[in-house]
Length: 253
Image 1: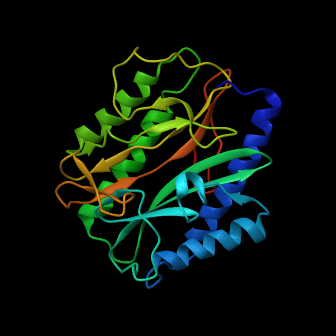
Image 2 (image 1 turned 90 degrees about the vertical axis):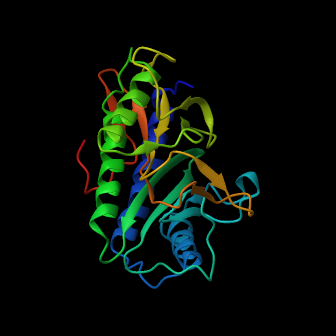
């Protein structure tokens, strides 16, 4: 859905505030913390420090403010008091936040302590793949351009891209049209228009792109037990290209 000038102004506020959540996490030593403790830390920061609402809590019956996906978990990892982040882990934290009626969505995969070179390489390529997709965004481009760029970059480095989960339109609702796939063909799919807002969120696997959902009905893991990494930003199509609404201070477009 295309946003008005005033709606985009409100989405910028939500995006900037969500970026502050990740900047807080950047300064937090995650090693030794339970994933539930990370969840509670983020909830306090969003509600008390930012006076905003954790948009994931209560959505689709989910009880927490974030997804925490460690190592072979692809997405939708559920916070738990007994799951502790260890030195050498990679962990994706996926957070949505609402302010003034508009939602921003972003995720980052963190390297915890001394991470093996192979895992570091996967995380680096996943982040690069997201930026490859973001660089395709401009009026007149197609959604297929984004997916093609993402998958091409991952495959060039020997990785696979998960196809069951994707980016999405966002605004007053967490999930709006269109779906933003992480694979595609150039020139295919919906044409981008100024004012469209959506997420780009590739999930890149070391091995097979096949995934499985665990018995809790939420946690998605790689089919072969190998590592997975994800990055996500909320973006807006501008008159001349793209604006990353959830851009953090340590990033440059």
